[in-house]
Length: 165
Image 1 (cartoon, rainbow, N blue to C red):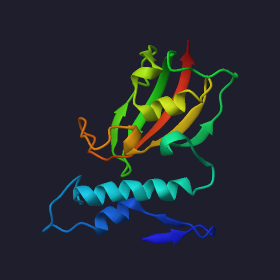
Image 2 (cartoon, rainbow, N blue to C red; image 1 turned 30 degrees about the vertical axis):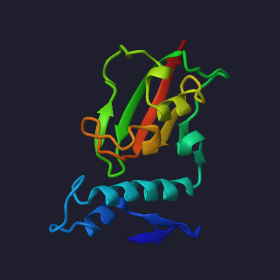
Image 3 (cartoon, rainbow, N blue to C red; image 1 turned 90 degrees about the vertical axis):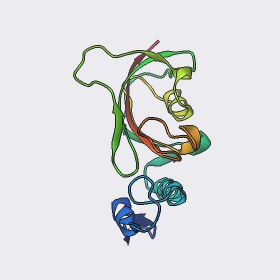
């Protein structure tokens, strides 16, 4: 289940981990784990991810990887109206949300109106930046289930900041 990339840092295959803890006689949560196991798996995921090369830790434990850099020197502020393209997944790869990439119209929103983890990332991005953002549950929905997102979930977003005002 653990392997190493020569850096001495253990890399965990979370899909393998999910299968390994599947015990039908136990209470289930998010497929194979009970609530505490799921919470711990999300904490472990962030700990391992934070040690990877190219991953930067921001306020509140939000982690970012720069996929590509945009242009400009200005960043949005909490009151800015932004337009983004995005895709949101859980640590098991399950997609829970995405923008409509086929539409030429992008729905604008204020930075201060989104979850804290998005705010932490957006106020550091430039127009055209594409980042992968790992948001701990404490900067997302915490111990509350929201729609098809289980409580204590780490949220992973690929975000492109298309424009802002």
